[in-house]
Image (cartoon, rainbow, N blue to C red; front, side, top):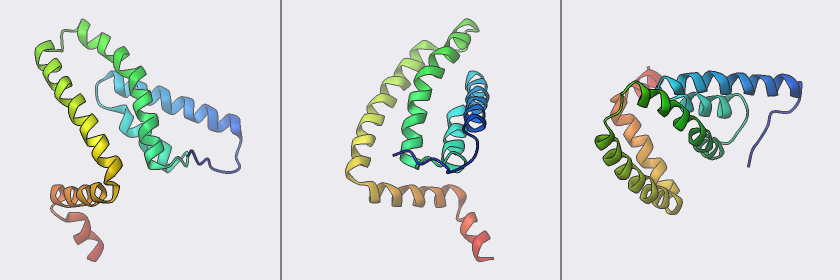
Length: 130
């Protein structure tokens, strides 16, 4: 469910959300990944729950990815054979991991924390305990 901040001018919130959409769309057009910033905005500033923000980001991606893809195709930035192979593998992995996550939410959360610790070499924990 979507949780919204209470109070404030609805028009200002609407305009700010529109501005965030434009900014993340521009970043997506560059191929950088504006969706990550969109999820950050939705969770930290718009009061949207993490899982809901993730779902909203997927919907956002459906619109932005083809638009960005047009520019990359025109500039010949895509090796179609590799992209199709990666895409097919990514779709299969997304379906199976989505199903796994739906059945094992706690386990996936633990795995993600352990992965984050491994990637950062525990740097965040050392910072907290220092």
